[in-house]
Image 1: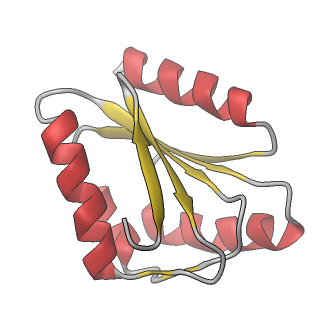
Image 2: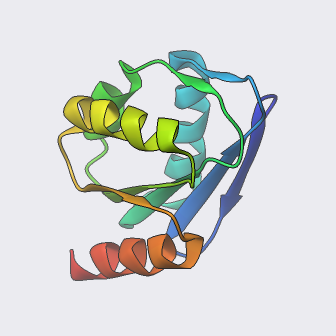
Length: 117
């Protein structure tokens, strides 16, 4: 993507966006398109690996909520600001969403959520 990269694995995808990027609804549709290609008839999880600081349009979460096969959304960061933002984002998403400091813990949680559904 023009604002970062999406890595696709067997049952989850990882997004790492560039410093200063803005995740708009249009860009979210690109991510949804990627998920539809790789996880069409399969449950999956999404990990937002926040190595960099970037902005997110919170209305995106309303659209992500509609993805029936998206079973887990994890945010990974060590930044205090990201923890604060996560609490606000979670209000918009209203489905299983967790915050992690450690990437491997996020992957384990996502895999468990995907397999249990």
